[in-house]
View 1: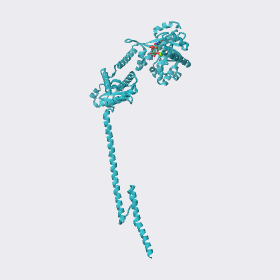
View 2 (view 1 turned 135 degrees about the vertical axis):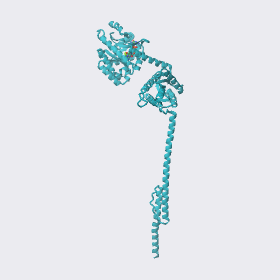
View 3 (view 1 turned 30 degrees about the vertical axis):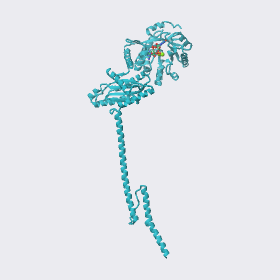
View 4 (view 1 turned 90 degrees about the horizontal axis):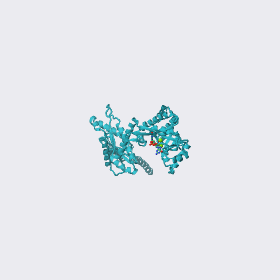
Length: 538
Ligand code: C2E
Ligand code: MG
Ligand code: MG
């Protein structure tokens, strides 16, 4: 009995220990684990008045306090971080602003004098490394003060901003356009050319481009009429670092001063010899324009002979009888006419004169079979109306198209070859013939020769000159003759001066000739005399 009572007490005691103590302590234990994992949603509802109940409630209170504190802390950290980010961005902005103020002009955002000097310093070093000249252009808007005085500073600012935009658009992205202050700007151009002359040309071209860009009218105020301004430009060139950036700016400034005193809207070089060259070219251009108006050009004709000694035609060569300069050779003025575009008008005059001569020849039995070769510059040939100009000339004079031969040089193939071929084909379809002048001196590829509707190649006189003494020239002449024959083209040799040259050419299969041996270029009045001889003694 006593044993049964003991077992009962132990069983009941065990049950009570499990339910009243162990289960509740287990809940507490799990709650501790949850908090360790930052989970504060505790499932602990022990309302008992005993020790464990009180402990559980205190534990829940403690957990709530910890959770609140933690949330407050997180909010504070977030807020502080945000403040730090803002402070950092502001510091960055301030640093950028300081940098901008130190190196850029606030009105136009262009580099200022300080940054420009730094860029020039780099450019000087780089000019040695790449062995190329650079150019500095200093420019100043003409009479800018008047705009500020009459229209106000706001209008002046609008003009400066627009002018700086146009300057940027006139140069390459890698060039530097800077504003020194007021209406004074400096453009730094690197890699302008390997020699002084080409760099000067490059600089002058940029200066002209800038002059044209600045001259476009400005709209400074709404509803105001357009305003126009011009610019004076001083240039200096550099290579190597024996001159400092400051000295270079001084040089450009001196040139700018000269441009201003020369009447503004002008370009001046610091270097006097270069300036003299530019002035000379400019004077020549003006005189050429006058010469065109005053009919100072004449066409000379040089005979072209076949291997029987018969004259088969002539090359028309332009001459300029200038009242100031006397006779000027084409080599002295054609390059200028090409550069300025005047060649288009000049070339048209040559074409018209030559076609008029062919018309006269057509009416005379002694000359009706003769052809005339006219030199055509690439720039002239590339005009979109060139085909029309030529066909109008031919039709207008009622001449046989095949009597007109156009001499092109290989330089024309450096341009849009498809367009060149198209132009040539249009004219060749009309019966006009083509000769490739100065052959061997240029860039001809054999592919072009095959592609083009040529009827003749002209061996350049430089190969003919030394034909009898230089084996290389001899080899070239032979090769050109063979090439011409294999492509079915006539071959004509120019610059034939001696009987030896002539005999050699004839023996080697070249059957057309032009040169002093047969006659120099002469005015048309002397041509009759030339024709009266039945044939050249050969
Ligand atoms: P080009 O077309 O190669 O003309 C041949 C040049 O050689 C001519 O010089 C001619 O007078 C010269 N010449 C002819 N035979 C001999 C000779 O036996 N010995 C020497 N030493 N020279 C000879 P020119 O008349 O001074 O013309 C020079 C260049 O000017 C021409 O070379 C041509 O490229 C250009 N040219 C001439 N007239 C015109 C023209 O109307 N339009 C164009 N675009 N260019 C022209
Ligand atoms: Mg020629
Ligand atoms: Mg030639």
